[in-house]
Length: 136
Image 1 (cartoon, rainbow, N blue to C red):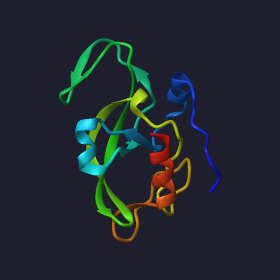
Image 2: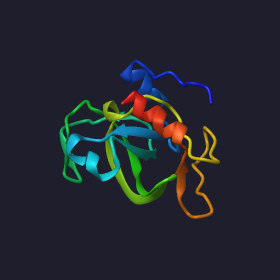
Image 3: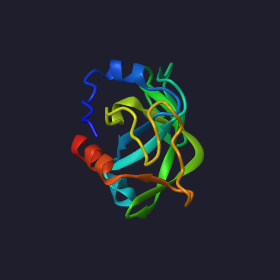
Image 4: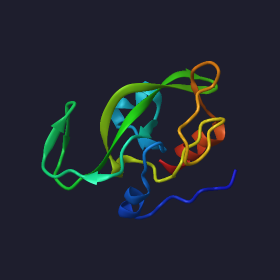
C-alpha cells in the first residue's frame, strides 16, 4: 500500500470531501475510552460553512466553521477491527478530521461506497488503522 500524504490546507481538504468517503476523526479526550483516539465517519455531504451559530444534537457550531454531514461507524470487534454503520446523520467539524483521504475497509475501493464483509461488519485492516494513529 503506498503512503498517502496528509493534506496540509484545511480549505483544500474540505474541497476534497465527497459523499461516500470514509475519513478518520480525532476523538475528544473525554471520548477516547469508547473506541480509541480515531473514529471513522462516512461522509454524506460536501463540506460547507455553518451560516450562523447553531446547536445540533447537543453540539455547538460557530458561524463559519467548515462541517460535513456524515454517519459514524461503531466499533463492534477489536481483532480484526470490525465496524457497523450507524443510521443517524451528524455534523462533524472538518478541522477534527485526519487529513488522509479515502480510508478503505477490506474489499473497498476509493471513490465507491464502503463494502461490508459477509459478517455484516466493515473490516479495517491493521495497516490502515496504524496509518490513522500515526497521523493523529
